[in-house]
Amino acid sequence: MATELKSNITLSELLEIIEDDYVLSKRRESYHYKDKTSKYDSNIVQIYKNKEENKIYLQNFDSYGNKMDLHTIKPVSIEELLVLYTGKNKIFKHKKRISKKSKDNSIVDETDSKKLIYEWLLKKHTEAIIIPEVTLGDRRVDYLALDKNITSIEIKSEVDTVERLEEQIKQYLLYSNYVYIAAHTSKIEKIKKMDIPDIVGLIEITSTKLKFLKRAKKQKVDYVVFKSFISYNEYLEMKRGFKGSSKIEKMDIELLFEKILSKKQQSEYIAYIMKSRYLQEDKIRRDKYKSGEILAALGSAKGIGINRMSNIVNIRGLKHYFDLPEESINTYLNKSKNQVLRAYKGFKYIELILEDRMFYLKVLKLLDIPYTHENSKILKYEVLKEQAKIILSNQSLITKSLEEEKKKLLKMIKEDVLVLDCRTKESMEYAELFLKENEITYTDIKIKSNILNIPEDIKKSNQVLLLLNKTSTFYFLKDTKKEYLFTFN
Image 1 (cartoon, rainbow, N blue to C red):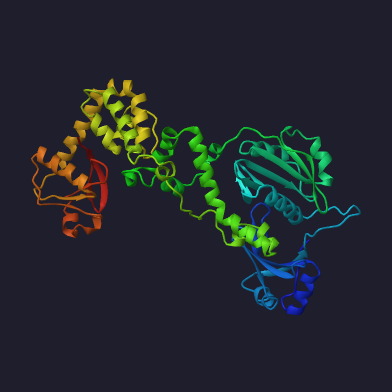
Image 2 (cartoon, rainbow, N blue to C red; image 1 turned 120 degrees about the vertical axis):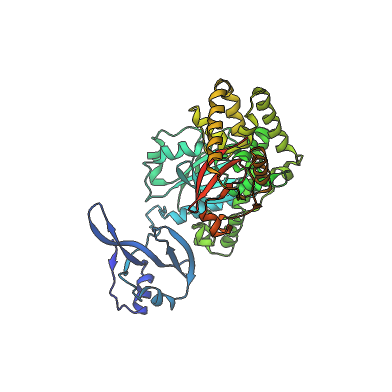
């Protein structure tokens, strides 16, 4: 139960409080819509003392109440951090959750439990990347060890509940070769009665050591299960080195990963990504542990200066990692494209559908074919192959739609003066071809990066035609806004 402190409390009084195993909390007021009450239950900072290390720790919290960085401070800083009120913030104290010793010297503190498990992992998995608090599925495991095998450990101290343990273990088994439950003595009998698979190991946590009641059995799981963990930036790194890599979309490299690599290669590469991602954090934790900063070694990633969400690690691309030919991706894409061309042989607009994404989506929508807005050549080729029968049987409908849009465009262009805003050289070539075929004269055609570069008098005269990147779709600039006109062949 937290107790509010007086606003004029002195530094000496604050020091006495933390010496007495209390945690000092500076809290902000938060409104609870459910019961329409305001409470001071949102932490800004917490300060407490670790007597074993003889250090005072400051724990920061973000606006959502999540723990951020953890670091040590000098006693004189306490008064400045807590006593100076800002707005409606208030100071509270509550008893620190510490190791309670019983007659059999058992421990209940989660930090002590994590310390014993971490020490065991360091000895058993000397080459592994060892990381706490990793989300697997929709659950967060206490420790994950990554080496040739994947090991998960769920810790249950005396103050923890085991109500969700069965569901937690089900999730961990999907991602691990070995799964262990490490539990305080008081939880063991209850856990034994639960519906826990026999392959899960059980460790009893006592006051000074771990007692292995049952060794975990290995199950067949490889690193491919972590494919969904690969980040956007890691996918971008994967394509480095291949010819034309700058034009390869993220979705394409994600799909090609499965198509150009064997299952064994996929597992090996994902293991490399996962270990690379956590390598720095693992090293910092080991160094903190060796230097005696136990709380930091066992604490949150942010507490040691690591932001897992934005931590970008340079990794070797697929080409360099497996020494693949630089043409590997283009070879696969060209093969798939040629399969589509053969399936649509004689269809007048197949090249347009293949090269122009806007027109491709328009055809799917016209024929009520399910589609995704993901920009992917591979997905496009696969959809076109699967839907060839439907599209080919509706050639006349597609042609009619295209010709109607073409007439609409030609009707709108009434003046001789025409400025074309083209994003790339490829777009400019499209535009010149279109104008020549339809005998439209123009005085200016150039590659522009922004429609704002077009003179205001020309904008107002509605004589600007926009041709966007990687497309043969025209837009008319009307009152500085794009208005869709026409997709041409």
